[in-house]
Length: 121
Image (tube, rainbow, N blue to C red):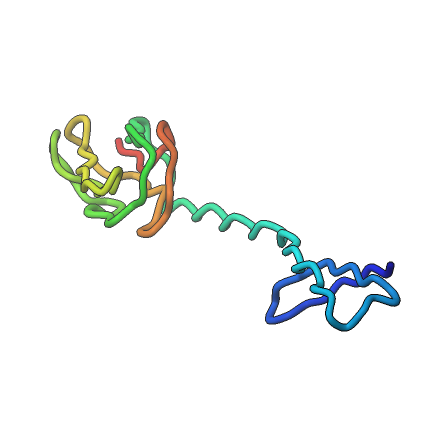
């Protein structure tokens, strides 16, 4: 028996070939070898310097849009970021009146609960 590693269309297969097998015998199906997992995207660079008040993600999800930019004055309850979680759009709001000091995420990024999304003064 001989072992071979074969790549077909980017898929890697380990194949064992039996020597002296008859032409009519069915060969075992090749088994796929799992590829290395893709590397996670690098964390987005923060925009601006961190402020005293953190706005954190209350749940894991995906950033759909960033409604405020650095330097924007916001009032308590104003939407800063829209987070999609469980197929629902959730507005992440300013916890108090202030100015956005930094935006720590970008649109399309996946975040975990408790991650800082933005800071404000």
